[in-house]
Length: 226
Ligand code: S3P
Image (cartoon, rainbow, N blue to C red; front, top):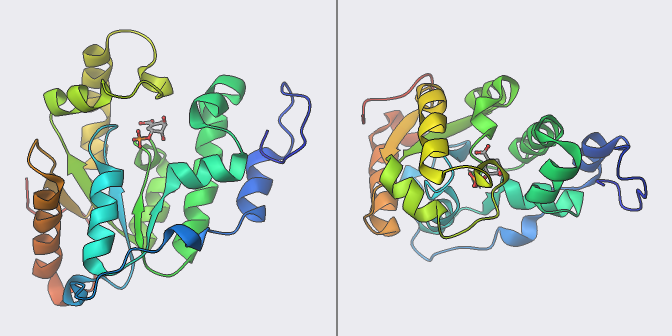
């Protein structure tokens, strides 16, 4: 499992704890730069994208980072790299609670690094400890998408453990019910519709510019784009 060389798959060794501590943030994926980044829109803290599976967190996050001239990190990728396992396999072998524990630790570590754009898995902001960590140390942006958009995007990839069983739309509908009131605690809410991702990035940049001194230092509660 997480520490390489664990041969007994039924007994997770210190696991996520040690992987989060042992693996440094990989800065090698933090490469995107533009010659004319929107520096004035950059907050002084990490920008974290939250939202349901299929909301476009990774794609939009990557483009946003490029536009801001900031590094980009995907929390799920970091977890997979540290664990040496794909997320579906972590869920299957060790369960969701174990995954959440590791997710929290990896995100805590990432937040200690320099400001960047961080895409989180859809459940990260639902964990109260992770949420508190994010609210305290980052500027959070909820990419809000409606059921149809999510269902269409999620139907293209079937490697998400929470969507593996049952009817895709029913599952997403239930997740929307439970999660949207919590995602609403993010500092900024931006709609992620069917429009090109670059347009969503434009909306985010606009929202960042509107913030006082574009500093992100007063991120308490969602603002008014709803
Ligand atoms: C999850 C979302 C996934 C991944 C895991 C759990 C969730 O990430 O972290 O499968 O609980 O919503 P994406 O939102 O990037 O698909």
